Structures are given as structure tokens and as C-alpha cells.
Length: 219
Image (cartoon, rainbow, N blue to C red; front, side, top):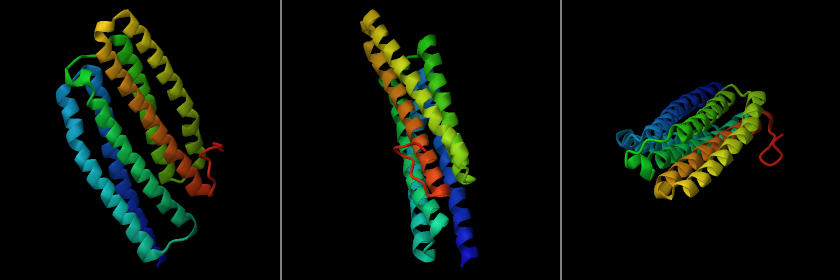
């Protein structure tokens, strides 16, 4: 029974890896789309959302099947609980990528200013690294690596607040472009939310590995 369970868990991990790879790519493309004002690329991101939704359903079904057939306990049960939650976080990141790529400025083909573009790309890269590290930490059950992701979330928050402050100043200076500035601010907020979801995965990794809930205390 244990051998069969391990095979099912390995299959589930492969499914999660595939889903995470698709989500990461959509996130990267969405940032590129808004930075360059590439409406066609933004449309591609939106079209891929259906694939992410389907993969999310498949992962959930696999989790429920393993729970029903093998009735796992201890660390295996915790991993399945975390896999279900992670699955939801990944699907939400896919939705956030769509939000980024659907902004009015991007859809209108308006390229970001160099200053704002550099700030947004930096935030996006930081969130991407957090997401990648949180996924890697979960797959190898490394709670110490997961805790590094928690620390990085504060840095992304700081960058977002700096970006928002800059946007506020620009709207005052150039109100004619207010719609574009607000669109870019919403994109930045979505990136900040991606970092939050990466943090969720890291917190759940600690729970899966150690049985410790750190959601509020951040262990």
C-alpha cells in the first residue's frame, strides 16, 4: 500500500510541477506585455488561462483520489492538504497574470515609461523568485528555504508602496495620463498579490514538513 501511495504522490508532484511551470510562464509574459504595451501578448496570456484552470481541476481530482483510496496519515496527509491549497494559490496567480495583461494601458498598446517599467520589472522578478523558491522548498520539504521566502515578502511590499507613491506623484504632475498610471498601479498590485500567494505556499511548506502553522506568527 505504501509503495502505491508513493507512486501516486510522485504523480501528483509532477502535475504540480507542470501547473507551476505554466503559471510561471504566464506571469512572466504578463509583465512583459504590460511593460512593452504588447496587446497581442496580453491576449495570449488571457487565452492560456483556460489551460491553467483545467490543470488546476486535474490536480484537485488527483488529490481527492489519493485521499479516498489510500487514507494517508502524518506527513503524507499534510502534503496532500498543502497540495490542495497550493493548487488554489497557483490558479489565483494565473488569474492575477490575466489581470496584469488585461490592463487598459496594455490593451491600448501603451508602453510604460522607463522609470515605472524598471520598477515594475524589479517587483515582478522579486515575486517570480519568491514563487520559484516556494515551489522548490515544497517539493523537497525544506522549511528553512521556505522561511527565506517569508522574509522576502516584506521587500516586495516596500517596493509596491514606493511604486504607488510614485504613481500618485505622476498623476498630480500629468493628470492627462491618469488612466494609464492607474492601470500600471493595478498591475503592480497584482504582482504584490503574487508574492502573497508565494508566501502562502512557503507557509504551507513549513506546515507540511514540521506540522507548524506559521501563518500569523511567521515562525
